[in-house]
Length: 377
Image 1: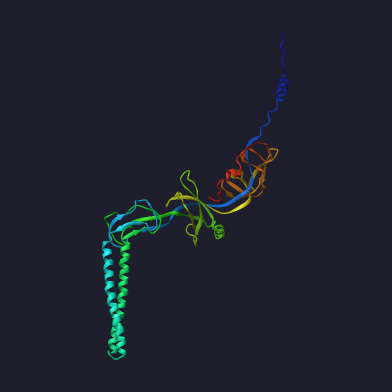
Image 2: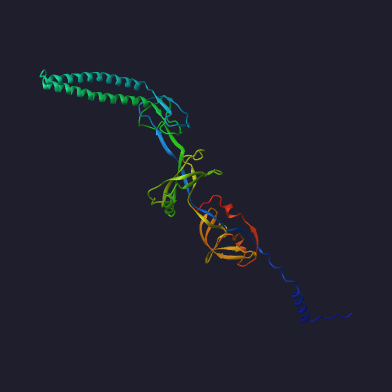
């Protein structure tokens, strides 16, 4: 058997030919992207801040008279009404003082009446020269002095009556009581020591919060127009927001923090807001109609500014420069560059280039995403 040897050059050419005859690699599949629709809808302008709940009024109840505390007419933590009895101080000394003052007044009224009649008689007798002018003047002066004594007596009776009334201490405001600081049997004095109890008015209640100096001109512009809508959400997980209105704007900017203090009033019918509680406050200043909104993830930043990828009807991704405005919840207001209705890419931008064909997946609409619009953190 004779063997045939293929020259080296011929073998190399066969190898190259075989390599060239292999099939071309498969085309790369389109990148999968998620899109959402740019929508035209109302865009509230909302300022968000942290706030703290404070009572509408706080009253530290103290005694106005000295005496032994004989009764407490409420339990700690009770809600009380204005005028409701809270404490009773031993009233017997003040009842006796009132009776004494009234007796003194009755005595002096009799003396004053006698002096008045005597002055009238002397005034008539002096006309007939039966008494001297000096005697008549003395009788008139005595009657005037006793009239002044009567005024002092009436004032003493009124003071004694007030002391007796103050022996029964009543709630000055409606609200929720705190802990009892003085118990039955203790001697209480006016204006000294701790109050008997502290009452916080929590229905309605206030929320105090601050806005930055940057946002204050907008707040100032709209605060005088009408009652601005305010929403307070307690910090606890799952807490429901409470609706209220702006009630106070401070008259100066804090130079240390660069903020202005505001207060909002809430009816707090469900007692969901509690004094000292921290809440997130959303202050709605105005609503911009017919605004174009896209999810915040759609807006990208490049060397030439902000842009979005728009997917056309042929599933091609086109880069569109836009002017992004303020945030509205998790979305962004587009001031220029979109008309609304376009499909914008919200996920997968890193996998595509301008003009590339993409595989489209749909994200939730802007209206669904913007249930509680908030403009500024």
